[in-house]
Length: 326
View (cartoon, one colour):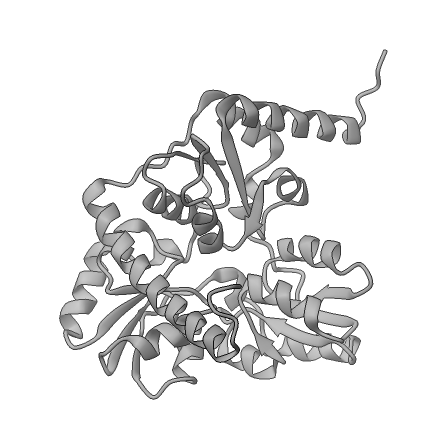
């Protein structure tokens, strides 16, 4: 009789996912905050927009998005011919939930001269009401690119504040926040620096201004991963969701990574388990669809952002004599 150890059970579940992937002609995407065993079975890992972009033009018939709802919506916006399945039907984002269309329209009426810049951590209907989207990595670039001198930034006040310190434009900040990042305090960071005095501090720009001010760098998840690889430091303090530790340690086994707080845990990101992924793929449940009228308008806001970002990359690469290569 074979003893079903936790390791064997994990291996069997992962193999089941891979078998289903082949059966469905699927591609599996996992956000950097997902559980390690979920990241391990993914074809692609990364941040939300990065993942949605990477599967554009995929030959896969099914996209299984291991993340939260707004991420799967973005994949559906950019890949209308694919069936997009959200790994867990209740995986949402409290930050994205902090603004609805009715409220946004009220703010737009209050500030008619302002361009609406929507963080990608918003639902499709909000993107459709916005002028342009941005990420935590390109927010400053996008805000500088819009012709308006006033910018209504939604929905994260902390990211908006960070961008406001890098631009002369008038920033009107909607009072939303990510409870994980907003929960980090300056006191926690200061105490962590005492425990690890040689560590370089990297935090997400969704953190409070006083926390960002104490950090060595404010970076998106993808930027954190790149920065850690390139840095000559051997120890780091990380101010973002704890899931990022897995790829950081995997890619940099010779370096140390410590969290700024033991509270950096997103319950919605952790709802996805291997059992849940298997069930979702077997039943094809949790399909994410975006009404075409909303999809088209939301895609326009995303496309405008991508045009700004690509223009900046092209200019930089041409100056370095690298043409259009990465």
